Amino acid sequence: MRISAKENAFLKATLNRVAFFVLTAFSLTTYAEPANYAFITNQLSNDISVIDIDKQVVVSTISAGKAPAGIALSQDGQRAIVTNPDSQNISVLDAKQFTEISQIPVGQGPVGIATNHDGSIAYVADWYEHKISVVDVNKQRIRHRIDVGKSPAGIIYDEPRNRLYVANRDDNTVSMIDAKSQQVLATVAVGKSPFGLALTADGQRLFSVNVQDSSVTMIDTQNLSVAATIAVGEWPYCAVSSPDGKFLYVTNQDENSVSVVDIAAAKSINTIDVEDSPEGIDISANGKHLYVSNWGDDSVSVIDTTTGARVTDIKTGKGSRAFGDFIISQ
Image 1 (spheres, one colour):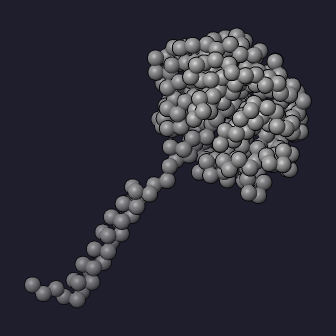
Image 2 (spheres, helix red, strand yellow):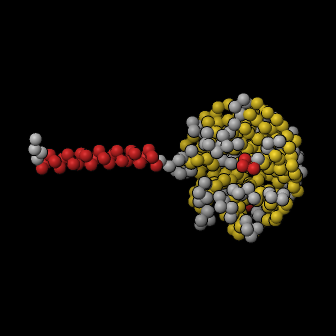
């Protein structure tokens, strides 16, 4: 059967359209980018704002316990775990469905929190009982408790090295714990009232944010010695290091700013203005953007790390704190 020129052109156009949609569908399925979210604890509205950091908008709000403060995320992107100081428990969240799975009692004053790669174990700093609770998240119970210094706050779990680091605010110290034996191996004296902690990706440098003397203590984790004390802004709270280990970013509550620290030079090299009373801070996986929760302004400020410019502010719930690791890639 012969096909006319007109019919042949129509057939080619149809096949081209089909091929286009097939290839487009294949590329979307094969090369779809992972979704990136920030989970912001709002202590005064008892909820968590979920921000799509690619679109820079709040896409969900999750109810939690009373006065949610600390946040930790599993590296597999499945769970977010939140401390609720006023209800004395932790909320376990499904990080994909944006729902609360359970609440687990953990003690009188849960504040800082860290977790292992799949979120099956949570380490919770108890401010009032001066202990770290090791929580079996799947079985919803405390497995063990570790004595540390007075009023533990910030906590970091370095899983590759089986180490826990804890900032003891009222002892002016940082504890290093062997996560396997659950024993305190060493205690390092730092500045006055350490609260937030940060660790470089290679695990070589630990930073204690010292609230009452407006400084950061840099600790060499190899020999557990103080490498430097770095001046930052007034009443610093939290910090995060860049993925390449070159910079440290510190929130300054009383100056409404973020200090940029050159780690190699051990000095502050820039200050970036944000909104009222910045507390939690985290950085995107590619290191291009900082996200800063502003307690007094109920918002998150987004900072371009290349230019040092504040790009936008995203409204969240009341009393945004986000104390810990709050950015996740799905």
